[in-house]
Length: 170
Image (cartoon, rainbow, N blue to C red; front, side, top):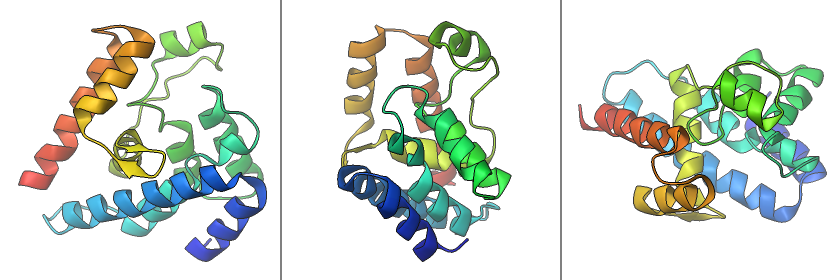
């Protein structure tokens, strides 16, 4: 699927604010992926661009924590590549462990980003509030308000931030 087809689908089933957020995440994730690729890393920039665009497609049905799982189901049902479905499934924060998934009522498995493309989209999504880019400190404050200081999710977000920044500095 190409980007324009993905955008048409997103506009058809999601609210305008979700579409605008997804466009902002896609642009930022694409920018990050190009910079990382230019430093010699093997990254599929087109997958990142489309993954950023469709990462929140599950918000067409729910705005709860399960929107990643729902989005992956939508993408699989529509015949999208599994790599794209995994971006949607694993993009929340810096991922969710199997134990946390069980506590949250999600199907019991790890939802941690594995591929570089998954990590880039999750990171870009963390740094976009609505359509605005923010600093990592803003992200940490937001998650600490929700989850508490020192929560494993907060630590994973910081680790993901460090990992992406290390790739950008090489």
